[in-house]
Length: 244
Ligand SMILES: [Zn+2]
Ligand SMILES: [Zn+2]
Image 1: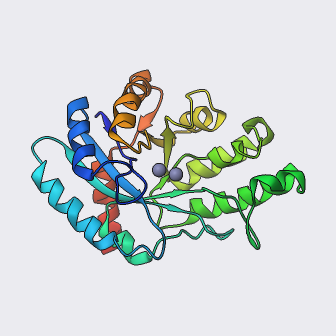
Image 2 (image 1 turned 135 degrees about the vertical axis):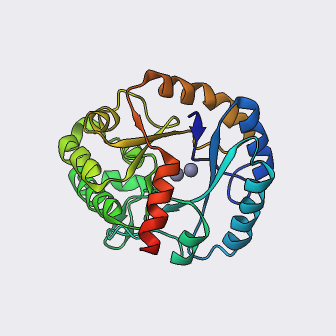
Image 3 (image 1 turned 135 degrees about the horizontal axis):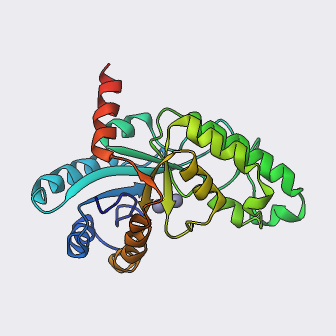
């Protein structure tokens, strides 16, 4: 199934409306997409956003399968996400991502690389990442490890066996984000070997992004080296779990 389950609309920082994104996706030939706008705990538009996406699911149901989602960033070393828990029940998918590396009092700034040893930044990142993996609210780990690049930390400097073991044990879906990852990234390659379920997503912020990135998404899917999650099955199982 050709799909892209991470993109933004003008409900957050995307340039286009959900309708424009959906119509572009239909034009590309996607069978399913998710619109996953960035949220904050204080976001007051999530309810209208969710009901808008519900109506669009109906409107386009014969052309494409639409899922609703939110992308929420990690706010602390405990792996908490910046989203009100009520948001989770309004959408299909919760993406968790580290956009800034937390520390005990706030976040690391890029300039902190001059004051802290890399090992300290890595230690804090690892703690937050492992807790994110344990966070039951989160379905998909979006662009894993991306934030470390900004601190000049390469994957070779990380305990990759341990990280990819934890990802596999968590049962979370790992995103191969075509903006940040390649098939050769150790986190991607090792996770694929360990049987982790993947989604290949573009994180597009406009119709133009969506079109350009679709070629990469297709290439990764065709590579056949990733076990792509059956998202329908996943959502059915998730629903059973929350009702159970
Ligand atoms: Zn993100
Ligand atoms: Zn995103």
